[in-house]
Amino acid sequence: MNIKYWLLKSEPNAWSWENQVKEGSSMWDGVRNYQARNNLKKMKKNDLCFFYHSVTERSIVGIVKVVKEHYPDPTDKTERFVVVDVKAMKKLNNPVSLDQIKENNKLKDIGLVKQSRLSVMPLKKTEWDMIIKMSN
Image 1 (cartoon, helix red, strand yellow):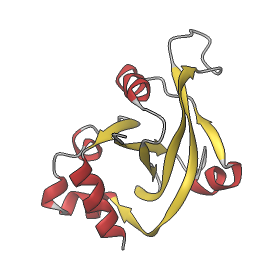
Image 2: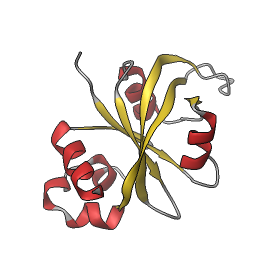
Image 3: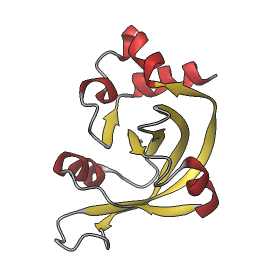
């Protein structure tokens, strides 16, 4: 099994880590950017995603797993966008902030820094491992 790694951004006042944990498995909806949609379409079952609180906290707080591959977003009237279902797996020992990520030279090419507006982005295994290490 070839697991891929991703980062999902959510505004904590719209959908927080706490909401995700309480819900268990839920659809990741509301994506209205074509590049982010294409990333959702590339996700496979069991892929792992960092859960990032954007806007106010600007930090990675947890890990979710893809439990259902893409299907049409029921909140999208244009029928152009998709969702995946994700399930909360683990809260990080310590949140990893955007500032910490920017300070780490090994993460200078990460999507979070290069394309800060993108809500769904791929990560390399090395980037994933570095962020895990930073959270411990």
